[in-house]
Image 1 (cartoon, rainbow, N blue to C red):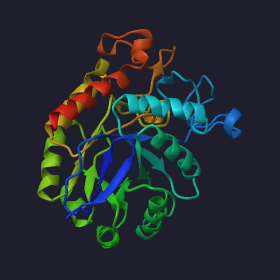
Image 2 (cartoon, rainbow, N blue to C red):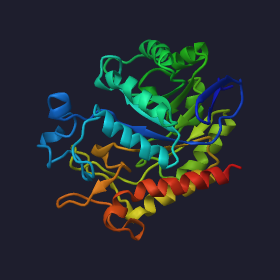
Image 3 (cartoon, rainbow, N blue to C red):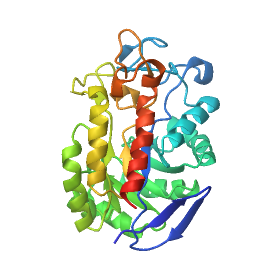
Image 4 (cartoon, rainbow, N blue to C red):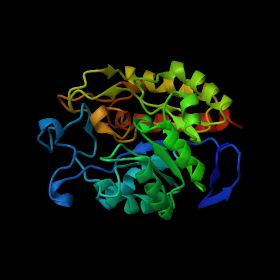
Length: 321
């Protein structure tokens, strides 16, 4: 039986314990606060990986409309979170690499800015060095102190399922989601729910089955939708899921709604390395772009995925009435 704290959004976050109650349907988005520039951080962070040379040669198959930016720039952060909220998203799922990471150092500012714009904040606990179930237990306690009640665990089954079950049986006041398409395994680990994240492995055709299996196990289902995948400029991964001028995003959203989700998670707002981002992108020579998506061009195309997210967020709200 899931341990549930219902998160209700009006102008403030209200938490109310309710064992066994279903979570309200809503939209979450994976967010990466790991970028840096010389002006704000003393050097480039992430944009330069795989031997690239910012500010115009970036480790991304797409070029950000904002250029190579710093996630520590508070004005820019505010603009990002404003457009996320305007797209109908109500939960920011922040990539988090442990308490010694730059992502942790930036989390308080991200959380403060997000909540000021009506977004709840969740942590995406990544496979940081020496991560164990014991360290995650301490992490959850620390994150709870920052007001975070939803925790998404990426690659949880790098660690023993039985150890997760023992930990999850001890936790209260928090929901823990496993990144997996295997509902039985998530249930065996004592998780409250599951999400899929990887839009290459889990296409729209698998979401109904995954959510049906999750419901049978008494789990929350938070299937992930995304616009496509293209990590060729950021490393050695040559796999591509084409965007098909927006059709990929639409098909995944449509499948997610039909799956009857508890919430829908979006991969991603700004994972530029993997080309899953919906943050505005500028058409620039040598890079992919959003030109032609939904018939849009120029400035309208740059923010086309945000506008389409607003459309689907409204459809989700209508779908669950």
